[in-house]
Every structure is written in C-alpha cells, then in structure tokens.
Length: 361
Length: 193
Image (cartoon, rainbow over all chains, first blue to last red; front, side, top):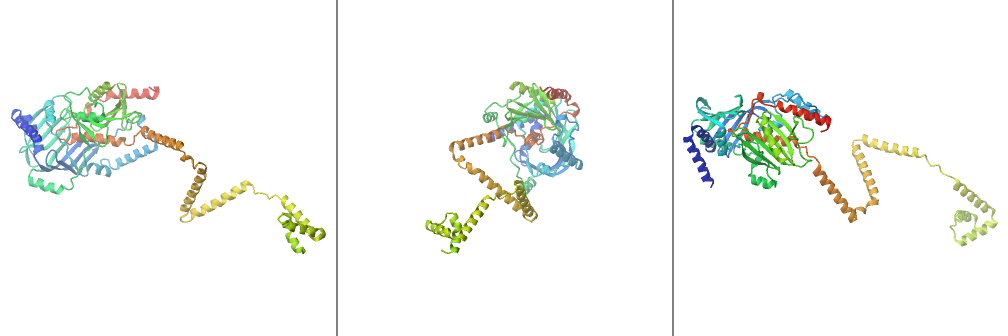
C-alpha cells in the first residue's frame, strides 16, 4: 500500500516536471529531499523567538524521515531588546521579582550577546531530528499562493553548480523565498528568507556538502551511536482522534486569511488536553493551541504577566505578547485556553481570534 | 518496767501505736512516776508547737526566676559546648514529645471511635482534594509558553520550504491596538468595570 502510494507520488512529480517547468522544479527539490542522502556543514542564520542567531550546523541526511542536525558552534547571536517602557501593572511587584530583574539586567550588561550556559546547552547540544515534510499538500499550497520562477545561476555553492528557484507571493504582505539547489540532483544548498519588503531576514548556506554514498556511510557510522534525538514533543493526530480524546469538537476558526488551510493537527505529548492546529499558506503559517481548562486554572485571567498586555476583544480579555517576529495572543472562552502564534500581521490574527470568540459565545 | 523503756515508748503512746496491754502498763507507771509524767507533758507541748508552726513557702516569682535561671544556665552550657546544639535540639524534641503524650492522654481513644474517625478521614480527604483542585496552578506558566513557542518555531525554521518571516517591522499595524488597551485598563483600574 505504502509502496504504491509512493510510486503514485513520484509518478505525479515526474509528470509535473514536463507540464510545468517551475512547479516541476519544486517537486524535484522535494523528491531529492526524500531520495538523496548527503552529509554537510552549513551556516544558518534565523530570526528566532530570542533574537537573531547564526550557527554552524552539521547535517546528516539519509532521507526526509531520517535527517539529523547538530549545532557545532554558535557563530553569532543578537538578542532582541526588551522594551524599556512598561505599564504600571507590569512593574515588579515584590522584592523577589525586583531582584530577579536586576540579576537578569546585570547578566545582559556583562554578556549582551551571550547565552547562559544552561540555556545554551539546552538549545544547542545534541542531535535534533529534522521535521521536514515536503508533502504534496504543502507543495500544492505554495503553487497555489506563490509564483515560482527558475533562473539559471552562475553561483557555485560548496563547489556545486546551482540553479535558483524564486518564490514570490501572489498576495500582499507575504514572504519571499530564494532557493538555490544543486543542478545535478536538486538538493537545496542555500535558502534566503525575505519579508514582504524584500529585506533579508534569515538564510542558510552549505559551506561543504558531499553526496558520495561512501562519505555519507562513513559519517553515519561515526555519529550513529551519539544520534539519540529525544522523542518529538508532539505528534500528528487526525481530527476524529483529537475529538474522541477531547470528547468535544476541536475549535477551528471560521475566518482564515486568504490562501490558508489546515495543514496538520498535533497533540502535545505529556499534556492530555492540549492540541494544536497548524495552518499555512505554503510558506507562512500560524499555530492555534487549545487546552481544556477551568475558571480557576486558566492562565488568561487577572493582571497580565510581565511582557504581556491585556486588551479587550468582543468582550473577552485578550493577552498580547511579542517575541521577535512572532506575535502571540492568548484568551479563554468556555473553559478552553487558546494561544495563537504567528508571524502574520496582527490585524489578520485578530480576525481569526474574533471568528473563534464569536463562534463560541 | 524501768524509766528508760517507758520513756522510749512515750512517743508511740502519744501516737496510739501501742497495744492495749502496753498502754495500760505505761498509764500505771505514769501514776506514780513524776519524772516520766514531766517527760510526757514535754512531748505533748513540743507536738503542739510543731503543729502550730507554718513553713513559709518561697514567693512564686522567686520560684519561677530560679527555675528560669537554672534552665538558661543549662542551655547556655549546651550551646557553648561543641555539640551543644544537638543536645539542646534533642532536649527540646523530647520535651515536645512528652508534652504531646501528656496532651493526648485524654484523647487516646478518640480516634478509635469509628464514626469520628471516618468523619475526620473524609473531611481531611475532602479538604486535600479541594485544595489540589482549586489551587491555581501558575508555576509552569513560562515553561509551558516556551514549549509552545518552540513547537511553533520548530515546524517553520526546520523546514526549508517554510518561512518564519513576518511583515517588515515598519508596516506592522500595532498602533490600532494600543488605544483600546489603555482605555480598558483605565476602566478596570478606576471604575471597576
């Protein structure tokens, strides 16, 4: 069954190459991710929730399902500034909180771009399993919502001839992506992420990569023993399964930004009643977390925590927070705690939230 | 009977501790012996004086202060010695235990009464579960949010076909929200709405 599905999948990919050259390129890239094994070292700069971070990463890729990464070194890091202005209610209330803030500020002054040893080890030590999906649904959404354009490129990356795939949005306020891939096999060698204004906000590029099976095998044997990625923190679950566990309907927003679709439902391990829904337009996405709660246990009540602000939306207290490019909104309706995380414009997020609140009231 | 024997028994005679025969013999002797009669009357006088004597008890304040001084001296001596704190702690613990035992003497059968015991058990469990259920759990707040942020970021940044790039900072329309926030905050703080 699985074999026949895979055959159909790649048959469709191959068929599409000849019909639509640029869409076919995207499928070719996806196919390479599933089929080509490689080992390489890359430099990666991302805008994370903590700030901008550049790391040197070792990648050991057998297939899309068996892809592992390990940070070798943190090349540079710039943390986001904490806003100076704070509301009255956000001022530290007691001696303990004032002491903690003073300690944190002192630490920031001494090591402005640094990370605490504990955080650093938690974030960067050990191997992580890649979670790339490259599913047909994902690719179909990119094709639907973005323009694809393949350009020849003179640039050599890690000594390999490359071609360039440019993904530009059909709709305003969506990101742009430049993917450079190896001409010989379609493996991605460099990715540049740009915001709607065309400003570079994140990228990775391989400095060394090998597709030779012997090299990959040798590296795999070297690191096989130490590759023990922890269990994933969440797992996919079908809508029916989620609703059976919850014993109620999973709340889904009635309003979705143009081009967005539900991509996946995940259940957080170790938390019986927390599910999250991943919506995407292909590139951009938002995550909606739902946790069963009670009036006394809900996190979204009372005074906002430090870094959060409270607003009212359709008569419901809504808590707002920003971490780097990510906006977070939390609220409670009918004993369900909601948390919406996204890099989308906040007004679009508010429309999503309003549709949920109005539906549940 | 000679005088010495009689005089030895005079005290017992006064206390009515002698046999009837002995008493009769002593009374017969006293009738004709002036010396022994004088001794008997001297005994009786002494007894009356002793009975009239009242021993003055020390004032209660003095007694308490004396006791305190003794205890303080002992505990100081313990604290200044190398392992004095252990001795002091032990003494306090034993004193506490003794007090508990003394206090529980009156109630030692109370817990064995089935009705009271079961009622106490049910009440205790009710309070415990009520506390556990109603107590607001705020401790893992930031940790949990970190997990949520991590999950969201992970599924974007680990996938080359995804993007965690938002709008350019300058075009993010956040100003529309701040007005509402302050108004609501003011209302809640000062008008109690």
